[in-house]
Amino acid sequence: MQEPLDIGEIVLHHAADAYSIGIEPYFMLEWHKLDALQFGPFNLTPSRHVIFMVIAAVLVFLTMRIAGQKLQKQRASENAPKGFANAIEALVLFVRNDIAIANIGPDGARFAPLIMTLFFFILCMNLLGLVPHGATATGNLAVTAGLAVIAVLTIEISGFMKLGAAGYMRTIFPMVPGLSGAGAVAMAIFMAPIEIIGKLVKPFALCVRLFGNMTAGHFVILSLLGIIFLFGQLPFWNWGIGIVTATLVLAIMMLELFVGLLQAYVFALLTAVFIGLMQHEH
Image (cartoon, rainbow, N blue to C red; front, side):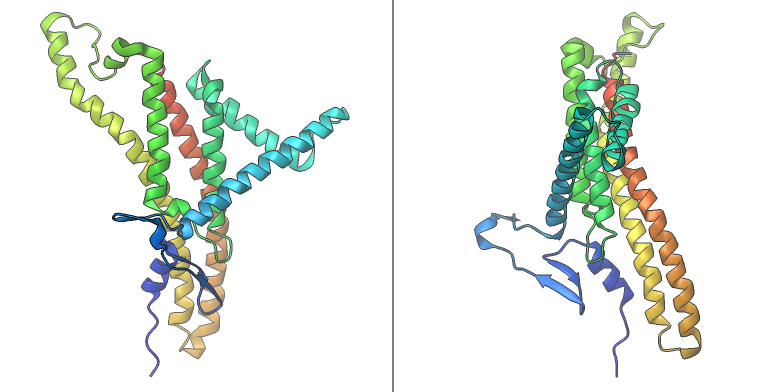
């Protein structure tokens, strides 16, 4: 007797990290942990998500490299940018001007390379999860947490450098307008825990928002695909369920393309907003 299909196990197997790439029985490449990369409780053997992070980084580098070379050739011949190079240049200028500089202020140009790197790196990782046998590295909480830590270190360190020690401490112990003396001191002490929690909430929000949105999309797609197999034993319903489900999955995958772009935009935007807030004492 054939064992019942465990849709939940299939969904979790695809979404979770592993030392394998592919989907059985069509294509599966597996490898084992390397003892040489074992350091105490930590094993640094590249996993599926690490490999797709590297692929995303290479794709970002090649995209910018090729676009830059094409732009140089077009400008050298005094031609207007066109095609692939024009599209990438427009996207880069949008992230630089409308996300970084618009939200950080006059000093935004200094942070534009970081914001652009976060945007394109996250976008590539999001889209690679929609490729056959691919994996979404941003569906890994450790990956999004690492990106959030980079963002919050940039926010706090740049704020400290811009405001100085005294100005930075006022972001923890704020001076409330209209209060002075003992009342101002008491209010500053009372507000300090709230301000510290606020600083910790920023990376948490960046981390969980990206992780949750990218993981949820794959869960929905794989769960809907599982309906086809669950009803596969019923000939009357098989074709109807298959057609309806495939149509829904196609629509959701189109939506996932937009969500992948949107989440990269939101992460870059919030990082720029938080940096901008810390650049000004008020």
